[in-house]
Length: 195
Length: 252
Image 1 (cartoon, rainbow over the protein chains, first blue to last red):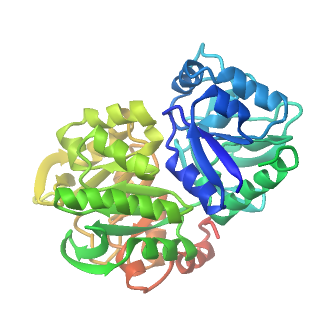
Image 2 (image 1 turned 135 degrees about the horizontal axis):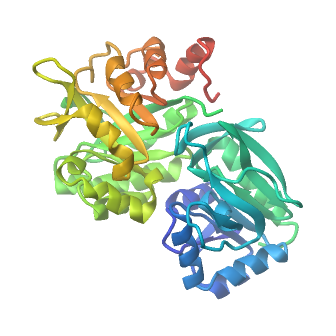
Image 3 (image 1 turned 180 degrees about the vertical axis):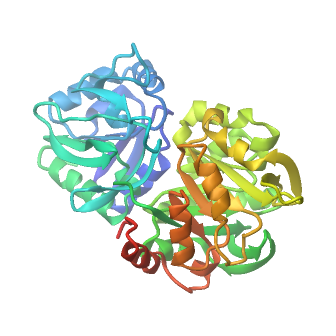
């Protein structure tokens, strides 16, 4: 059975993410232990809420080095929503707080003249994904591929490099389309780790 | 572009789906997991579950129901009904709700929304507003405790303060229209829309896609309905085809 470890620092609602991986037949564990997360074959960094609170939680659990190391060595990691943003350099939401610096981009707020938070389904490539966000990144840093969505203006829907997948939307809440994206990430990850 | 959402609502009492008119005369309408699964297959964009249980044991059962529905459902789940404390809201989120709606308790203790938003983020916090036409006929006032208590609070001003209070979404129910199947209160929607950029879910009065089209044009981002889906009069997918033909962007 495929083992998936969800980073649980208390800042995310992990129930939906757990349920989605369980529906895909995975064996799901929650952890904030750096050793376990370092050893785990597949790791998910979920997150809702505030950027600064998210970074504090990661640092206080001493997970920053482990997460950076995983991505640098192409060991499978999926970031979801705030989980994507925490991988970036910094966010307008929490000025002065450094992110993990894995994705070299600045997280910015949607402009004031459109609906925020962006709550709902928006087109991504050939499907629709469910979003719940007020902040986003606008362009792809060098070395990352992915797709965009449009809310007022185009923004990054997800980015991918090797076995790292970072989604601004919630694949776990994006119906069959989201489940398929998660399945593809697992299949892709299985080429570099045994799980 | 963000699509307009079609949201079936399940009223839950002691682990069973029920349906009433004007928050009363509840009748049994089935198993929550079965209904939720069917709605997802039929194209629902999200599900709202309202716990209408009046007892402590009923509320415990509601947590079990949220867990069971969450485990089956791969679309967002918003849960409300009788949420009175941050602890209660957190318990619902831990059980698998993606958003929690606060109604009467927000009126009695407005700082509740901010406390909750500081812990989980505003995007998980829904301000549920039941608005009724004032007895003297001018504007709307907030009603609470399943419509039994008229607060005198102006529903439009209350909606306008939702964002600063910590909410990330407004579930706006017309108490006058609820259960009547004669259309949403579009005047109410327009009045609220003019004062907030938060997403608004319109609720109360839906019978068909024309009513939903009217609500979306009046400024709703999502339309909620219960009876028409419970009674198999239509499905979210059927509604979406009709809305799309009218130029509304929907997920299909």
